[in-house]
Length: 172
Image 1 (cartoon, rainbow, N blue to C red):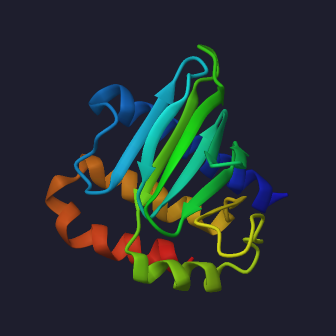
Image 2: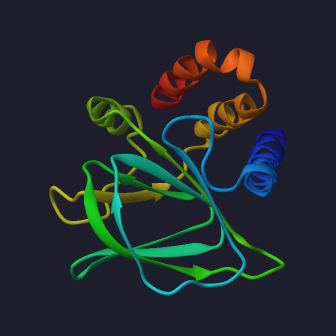
């Protein structure tokens, strides 16, 4: 029971931090490759080039597609892009009371294989050699991501600690 209470607290803290930082600074952050998203309503089609990255949905839901292959992911799930890939996406679940909240963090492509090997619970849900993969967000990723977001308010520590937190995140 203590573990589930801790997880729930970490999830709430991360959602609150993303919303607070987005309201203070908007989608772009002082941390290179970190982008926050907040939407009060579903979106139309968004055409974008997903960089090699991890997108974590903290509240709401989104759909991304490469051609006819569609990826649905929502709260406490993530989408990994193993290569740069053009997609069509839509935010499908968002309201003023429960906005869509997400963050994406670019990842060095050489680290992707380490991340997938280190997280065996991230079952492959797409076709072989898919550029995108969805999975439940591993519980041990919450803490390093929370620390990374806290660095936005600590510019004097950011240069030294950001690379360490990023590396920890990929090994969680």
